[in-house]
Amino acid sequence: MTLEIEKTALDGVLILTPQRFGDNRGFFSESWNRKRMEDAGLGIDFVQDNHSLSEQVGTVRGLHYQSPPYGQAKLVRCGRGRLYDVVVDIRKGSPTYGHWIGIELSFDNGKQLLIPEGFLHGFVTREPMTEIIYKCSNYYSKAHDGAVRFDDPDIGIDWGVNIAGLVLSEKDEAAPCLAEFDSPFIFDGALS
Ligand SMILES: Cc1cn([C@H]2C[C@H](O)[C@@H](COP(=O)(O)OP(=O)(O)O[C@H]3O[C@@H](C)C(=O)[C@@H](O)[C@H]3O)O2)c(=O)[nH]c1=O
Image (cartoon, rainbow, N blue to C red; front, side, top):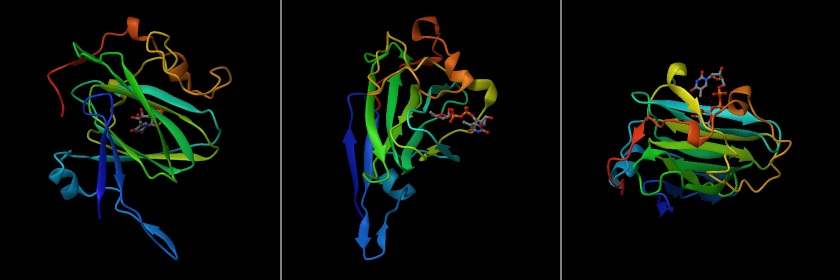
């Protein structure tokens, strides 16, 4: 079993690709292995697994965060379909504050995205009936849950879709832009 680990332009945000063992039935893969992650210096104490289904293509969820002390690192993958997953650095004082990266996660490519605390997370679905599955290092707290506009021009994410006509929650429609947002996260040094 191998675990491929790739860096991204955001320090600490990593693309993980666990090996798939294919045979006449399909494939088998260890989607998370605590020891293997620890051996790679990625020993995160995950406490909650989340799973959501987005029925329509062009469904956006994000950009989300939870404030300390309920900040969350996340390990994200796609269980069915295809999505474009986006991460934005919101650690005050970070050399990459406000920068974003995006990657396609799909059932087919089996890629995962590791997102440390201090980053916004969101995605848009590229196929109907797309499922996302992710581990979180802290429990959900409604009181600490927050969002920033997915289409904030100051962040300038290229979602690769026509922004008009996307499916969003009321919470995400009402989210503030980065300029109106006082991030609760402070940059405290490089992550990798
Ligand atoms: C996130 C979450 C939601 N809920 C509830 C609250 C609400 O009634 C319902 C739907 O919640 P939301 O609209 O916040 O779900 P959603 O928009 O899918 O929120 C998620 O988006 C992605 C991008 C993330 O990164 C996650 O951390 C989370 O913020 O589920 C929980 O019970 N536990 C949880 O961990």
